[in-house]
Structures are given as C-alpha cells and as structure tokens.
Image (cartoon, rainbow, N blue to C red; front, side, top):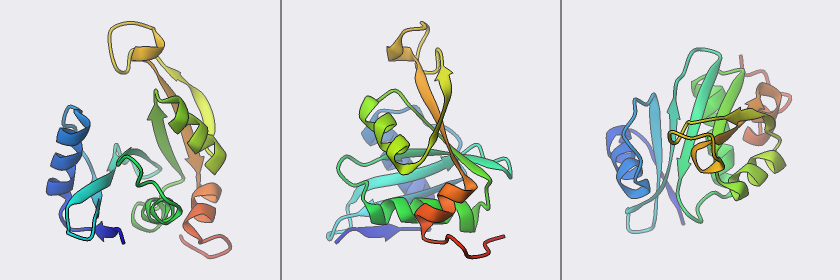
Length: 145
C-alpha cells in the first residue's frame, strides 16, 4: 500500500525535480508517496502560496488515485486555507483529468515552458475553487475556515 511521506519536504522536492527532469523552484510544501519498501514513487508540491491561491505540481506516474486527490485537496484546505488552487499542464490527459474533477479552464499561458507560442511551450491553466476543493477533500458541508 502506498504510504504518505510528510516532514521530508527537501528530500521529496529533490526527488521530484530529479525524477521529472524539472528545474528546481521555490516551494511551500512537498509531500511524497512511497511504496512498501519506503522508496519515493510520487509527490505533490505546493508553490506560489499567497494566502488565497496555491499552485499544485504533481509527479508520480500511475500514483494519482482518489486517495491521493483527497490528500492533496485536504492539504489545500486544511493547511493552506486557500480559496483556489491553480494547476497548469501541457499534457492532454492531465487537462482532461482535472476537468473531470471539477477544475475550471482559465486559459493558455504561452511561453511557460519555452521561447515560442507553440503548444509544446504553452500550458493550459485550470483552477479548483474552494467549494470543489472541499468536496474532493471529503469536507463538504463542514466548516473549514
């Protein structure tokens, strides 16, 4: 069974940057997923927190389950207490997935991943609003503020 890894933000972040081939960025919180042997197999990183919004970065092929979605949304509400959570992606399957979960498409961010206006260098931006976050966290109808 997948284990949630907390309190090891620097280790989780370093694993995410190295494994995904991403350039390291400043983060507010990193939570990992480990297999039965304790090896990291996934991670959620929260960046750009500004008291109302936080951006989510996720890496972990085959690990994004309902339980993990619930955990991510719970962190967004209970730890950050945000009104919205931003997700940006250039991957079509991820865009379909966040839409199915209730995220709202906000537009295309050009040149986010490179120097041209092509789809390769652009991202679709989505937002999960507070009501949807609470619902996905299993906190609908509960006072969380």
